[in-house]
Image (cartoon, rainbow, N blue to C red; front, top):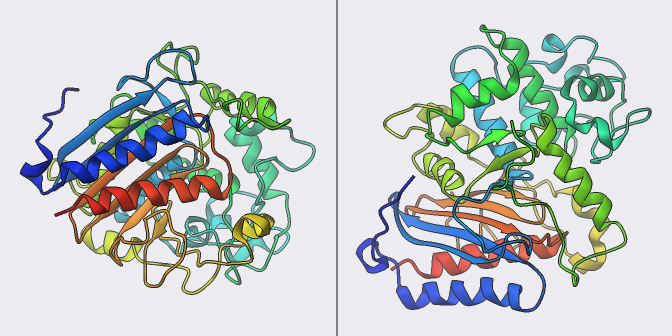
Length: 388
């Protein structure tokens, strides 16, 4: 789709400030951290900045047509679809998972609701590796994963803490959507028909009908960022093209990710399509975890340097800015009601309603751990600094 690109000054963006954004993205390419990126910055739905940088995993020059693995930005898609089903009366935030998914309510999991899954307070299996006897290769089989997660005990008491759940929570959300669909469609078809096509995200899908699509950007690490496990991780993530992973297996272009993010700027209603009602969006976009910290970062004490920061999870697959000074993908300077989604190592979106600002970001060349969070915060702060 062709976009009309406005002069930054016409929509209240400072051109010199946007050059600082250019420099920050290019610096990480030049220093060997990443291969390339695609970025959009808009105000009021009007794009004033749309650029590609570098290469697609070192294979070719980056293009607006490139298909990126969304990583956990897929959680935003799945969560928005779940809220769409809540508005339809097919689900409730208080729906018990075990009332929908057979054999789930075992080993103390009977209190888990849809809301617990959406804000990472359920206490289900937390790691990306599935429980024994399942293997990494089984991650793309949604039915197998539901069986696996249903057989596991709680990791912690439901609602007592928050810890980002990489795959399990949104796999369960995806299955709840599938099992309550009156048309009995598969999850990927529900996502296409009820989310992607109505938002004109025609290049976005869960999995790929053609996994070897030449537009796909392979998961890769630069030489500088590679570790002994990088090749195995890249192979695992590339396999998401072959199946359905509601928490991480989306594929999208920068233009499509912008369309989704800008729908969030409009509180779930683009005027052409009402994905989420205003009342539900206002509730779902709030901080739903209070002052809980995100215990998923406990492993990274050296990176955090002993500093903990609030989870601030909203119910749309991401984070609310809230108040205070702490590391947040929204950026330190975002307004209190700003919301963001972030995918591990490579992707992000953010909207700031006070500035009427939308940012979409996709990159090739993984930056793992907290460093990617720092990068996303920097990109969003630089975009915010461009607002006049």
